[in-house]
Length: 119
Image 1 (cartoon, one colour):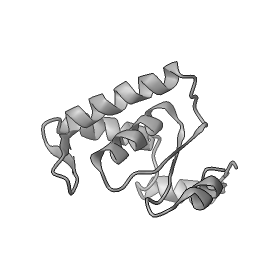
Image 2: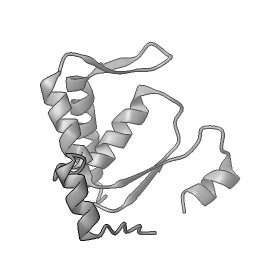
Image 3: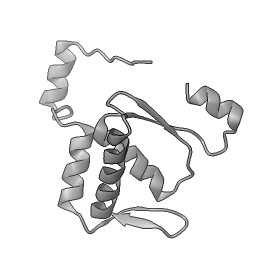
């Protein structure tokens, strides 16, 4: 399912004038942040695992390259089911890097729900 959002010219101009809308993508903002503070902690989970921005960006880039090598392309949907672990963020960012759509599934879902959620 493709979702298209349409904004008229007046709304676009107002958003740009207010500084709310620019040309950078979420992936661009991620890269800016990762470069600006590579050694700061980016994510921590309840199992004691953590990544700083540099390590998180590197892990996401490695996964993104693996996804591309496996034939995953921009616009493809990637469903995954993880609790709030650091690896969740790695997968999300890898999808962001290649333009894939991340489809996180709730950890409490079982086979019946994940089948529907993955469609």
